[in-house]
Image (cartoon, rainbow, N blue to C red):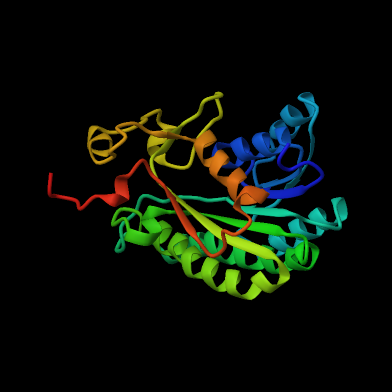
Length: 260
């Protein structure tokens, strides 16, 4: 098992990629500590892990609040004095363009997507130092290219890329690697995990013809495919990967739009 004896903190474990990653990490031997504001879905993930013989704990927290982040960090350290993996995965998405976005929505996106990873990482670094540890950010190609219909989401997730670079430089001497997954089109599950990030997914719409046409692989991605990339970044298989941005989008961002 690739994470035997390790402790992994994962945010957003109630659904989607966070839940898929929690289940995979637990199967690979990790003690998973999940954080989510969903007081129903989070504990269900823990029950599922424990039913399969794994070790898991859950803390309900609003990562959009500084107090929520600090309380979550304290809980993690109370469960394990050492941390080997942190996956900053939690996310929200408002389908609004620049002029439609209100200041409260803007600040909420920044708090969850950028401030929470910044602060939670800071608080857990002492428990991760000199352990060959790994911090993983979950970004998006909207954060590198920009999506005009998701202004706050794009800008707030976009900040994870330079944050990853500066954290990798600062934390590298402590043997903590920091990398970022930039995903897109993650709309399915191989194991019936609920995905609820976008309004389309909540409405049961999987992938539009336009999205399929602009994705070279011609299909949606699965949350389990994200989990497998996260496992690679979490374990010794990626021991010399640091400060990198790995794109998981079926090839979509490799195209020049409007030329085909």
